[in-house]
Image (cartoon, rainbow, N blue to C red):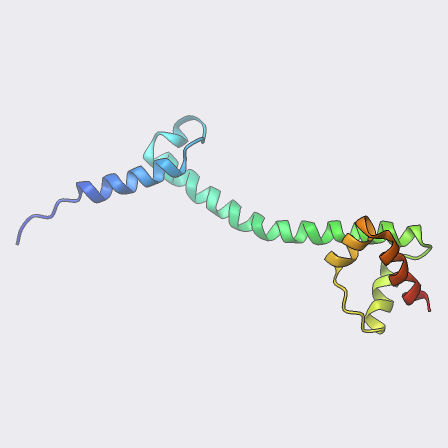
Length: 115
């Protein structure tokens, strides 16, 4: 059986790892072993933080809705509770945009809730 050499493949792996760690500091961008470990951590944090970003945005929407609701003499929990009881299908993202940018429409939503 002929001898198989792996120089091409190992060099390609090394090149892709080192190109992915471009911009990292110290040996993490030049040394293959350190670069591979840094990449594994970076990918793990990127995965977690993509999910945390969604969580943080929902919290921000809640704060904006609460601020808009308190300007109209109600609270976030009362507003969301009555919206659910009246089967209004506005999600928190839309409500926060309305309270921030379209205050007249948000006033109408609150007036509907207060009826």
